[in-house]
Amino acid sequence: MTETIRIQNPTTLTNFLKLCKHMGFANNENLTALKWQWLVDNNGSWWGTVLNGNIIAVSGVHPFKDGYRTLFRGVQTFQRPAGLNKYHMSSYGFAEHLPRQIEWAQVMSNDTDVPIYITTNVDNDASGKMLRVNKIFNILEKQKIVDFVGEEDVYYTKQNIWKLNKKEYYGHRYKTPKKN
Image: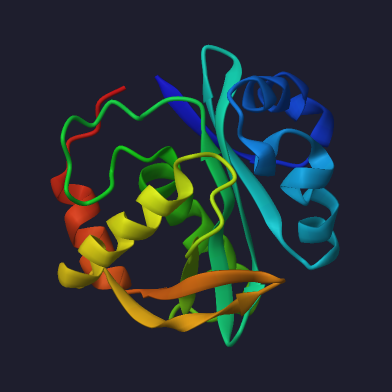
């Protein structure tokens, strides 16, 4: 069974970061590449998925535009066992971190309707999987789970910006059986 936790101590990520480096995930191979301190300094929060005492997925949330950017630096070391799923629920971040990050953003902003954004890389693929995630978000847009906001440089990287449709997201999330 997995557990979603808020990660406050970076030393808990030591083994996870070593595994990311071994897997070739350049954006997540050490605390500097992960931008651990940047997120903390910008009033953000880190979240992780733990399985059998090991962190297997990490992502962050921080203030962005008129709301919050979720799933920042999201990475998982293997796919969530959700089976074939057109709603991206095979992602620990999307299925398990995102609800917690939404709740956290609502508390931090004191606004239950705070806008939630997710960005995807347009042409920089530091892991070999990032461009595939961008394609998935194009599919999620057709399902009205996200709305395409636009393409822009976000912290020196060309990104597509997506605004989460929380009602659609939660509707599909709760239809998807949880398998752990």
